[in-house]
Length: 481
Image (cartoon, rainbow, N blue to C red):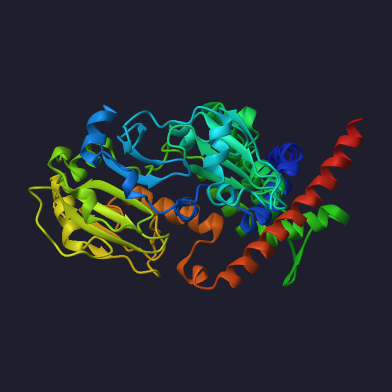
């Protein structure tokens, strides 16, 4: 009798949650499969470098130190010199904004027209007079479905350039720097309406209000997790026994839903709850972002005016991009040749002269991290099979880990950026979200085909289970009418 009085409210609650969320569950499982094969469009560093032209050093009249002074950006962190389709430009970046300057006269190099954006969006095609393409069209936008994220804020306004080619490519040109920050294709956009957009409930009109969107997803996922947990409890409590056989008190669709629920329960529960954790944003777990004060301590306060006057005379003419960045109180020059090759130098009048090499060395990372004032172990290279492995911004570039007490710092060996800070909370989050929700486990990551098969199979099981809930919900709603 006690069990019956306790069980009946659970069943009623589960039915209410099931009617409310069965369609959402089916949508999440189906769109999760699509997302695995066609992720949401994102900026590509290799694509950005591939779009650059070799730097024409003969058209540069000013040094990087002069560009820093002309930018009027307080405490610059990075300076890049690149060849746009129209002219070479410097891009001076601080902690919160960037400014592009013409290398010929240090005038403002921001993009001001759709016509200019078309030239910048089609560097190779423009040189060939677009012989194999229809005439591109461009429009200035603040944001759209694919660029509503805050990561594009420093580039607004954006120019969306439709290439009108067979692939339906659209390129987004930064109004700030003139770079191509994103490229999408018609297939990519089409599939994402069935994948990421429905999965994350990601229409631009809602996503343009990040706090509202985040709160909506957080509550929906939390209530869905509660409903799934109630279903698991009811499913277990309703199991009967006849000897050694398990029995279900239901028939038809109800019995199918019961048995599928029991079979799929471990995956459904962990997947839905870990999906809720994806919206945590620092509420329960740390974010992995390094504090601004720590960033400033690591990069230091070097004097940009100490760069040698003949700095540009020391670089090869074949470079696709030159970058000067501060790290450990030093200024480094990074010479890039395509997306997979580079050379690093320490520069500046007071800097030690070290031989060229492609990436930072562990002792240089140690020197920079010591500036945090924390007891840190020696840095070491993260191996690909590491349980907390993370990628560099550049293909095949090393990532270093420095352990400082309970905090781990991951540093990109290509450009000195601190990728993330992992404390105990963030390391737990890595397993509870990345592991359980995307099957990001080292063994499976080494066998991508096996991981893909598991993701498709498990999400398909979850989808079929959700369909049985939809049929039952439809039946209950009809009985109310």
